[in-house]
Image 1 (cartoon, rainbow, N blue to C red):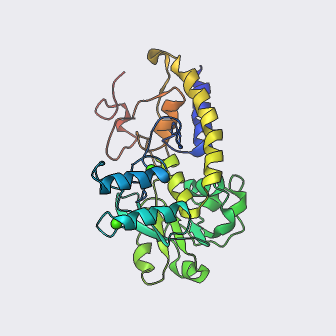
Image 2 (cartoon, protein in one colour; image 1 turned 60 degrees about the horizontal axis):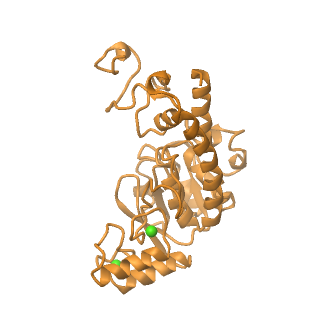
Length: 309
Ligand SMILES: [Ca+2]
Ligand SMILES: [Ca+2]
């Protein structure tokens, strides 16, 4: 496989779903590769289903250990009410969903969600995969990864009202009256939670940039789009398994070493999503294991900055 082919594959994988966790196989088949971070996923797998009810029953009769996600209704104890709550999640009738956000904090979002605002391009990909575009009432524009900076790729979202750039216009958000606002990291509309206090608008922040399938599945439960998610993952895994099979036959020493010169004179490490796409496509990201704030100017040739070889 040529270097050009690898890079093209990495780009294709990013387009399939521009993120890490791309070897994930959600569902009862396939390897376990992530945990669905929604409370009620008592057995800590990729789904919420009857197995979680059975698991909580096992906790109550002493057969199973308590897990971090077993307290489905987040009232500080595990009892029959959690089993009832899980049944509501399965039946899509719960009043709220408790989940872990991109900062690792327990959060909640109302359910069902009829009107949402989304910012950040990866989040838009998730919404489109789930066929939930008709619930979007506003998007961001102007920033590097805003939806409306991709007029061809995300054409469905071009005619929607804008909430502005990365700073987000709180007044515009209030005017659009969404149930929730879906964002990326803290750099995406910082402080908007404070500005929306008392507005009954939930802010959902997920790692759509690096934990793609996990984030996809969390949004799936928030929007009740399990059927569409399963169809997508079946399609996705068909391609990813093909890529993995072909890449597995390439000796490590024949794999191209890749450096990504990213905007802002930065590069990408493991956890960025880009690095995982490169590695899945058969490349070696030479900056994969570095930590901290990276810059690709000046010090890039230093072995203190990048591994030798
Ligand atoms: Ca489960
Ligand atoms: Ca409970």
